Picture 1 (cartoon, rainbow, N blue to C red):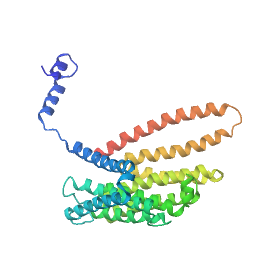
Picture 2: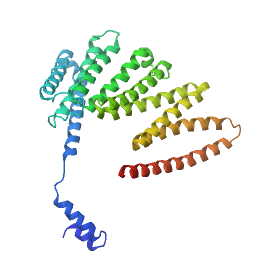
Picture 3: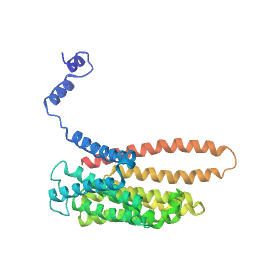
Amino acid sequence: MDIFEQLHQQNFITRQQLDKIKLQQQQPVSVHWDILMLLYLGILLATTALGILVYKNIDTIGHTAIIISIGLTCLACFVYCFKKANKYAPVKVESPNILFDYILLMGCLLLLTFVGYLQYQYNVFGNLWGLAVFIPMVILFFCAYYFDHIGVLSIAITNLAAWLGITVTPLQILNQNNFSDERLIYSGILLGAALIVFSIITMQKNIKAHFTFTYKNFGAHILFIALLAAMFNYHNIYLVWFLAIIAVAYWFFNNAVKKNAFYFLVITVLYAYIAVSYVIIDLLFAIPDTSAVYLGAIYFIGSGIALIRLLMFYNKKLKQDASI
């Protein structure tokens, strides 16, 4: 006897539920996303294996042979993509086949490995480390738009952030892991704001409008993190940065509610909560006795409950608005 029949006889499921299960069993099962996940995993495993191969056999294989192999494989990926790619269009362009996106992704990852290897081993760009990031960044942005690939766009934006950090911050500061440098904080604020503005322009001009989420997502996180870093590092004027965070959060919150974007609503509320909590805890520390500890505990318990209730309310509200 079928296991679901047994569950029905034992009153674990109703007849209606049993009929739905039988109906689902008769329908074909899609393995589309499973195949895509395996392809992504294959790309990551292949690039990881390449790194391990280089690390363990660097003395026996030789730098020249490794660089040539990586370069030829990268070139083969790009040649394939240019031959198979559909014509560029400002709207979304579908991939010519299921393998196309993954071969392009592999080519872009190998490009980063190739340029980084050249700079590390042969110091091709000398002390101009920014060029080792800038050149792949330009190529990645071109590939993201020409081949219409969101994954490559994400890598390009990451490279943009890395290039900006290397450009505005002395190399010795990066080596010393000192990320409180004010130039790095200000560049993060400018980059985050620029990405958000670009996401708006992308949507309004309808130029790869489906890239809007990626730009806005990176911009939101970079901007909020940079503002929080400024708030934490410049304690004497932290209220100024707090007001800036609240202003940005207000814009994101209204925009998220307007567009039924629960994801952006969640991250906005969380970043704003961190900023508000910092101010409240700072005020509590001004209390001389131990009552500050109890007040802090009460605040986090109460605010945590209120935060959960707020997110549950807007989750329900946005779902209702989306169904109208």
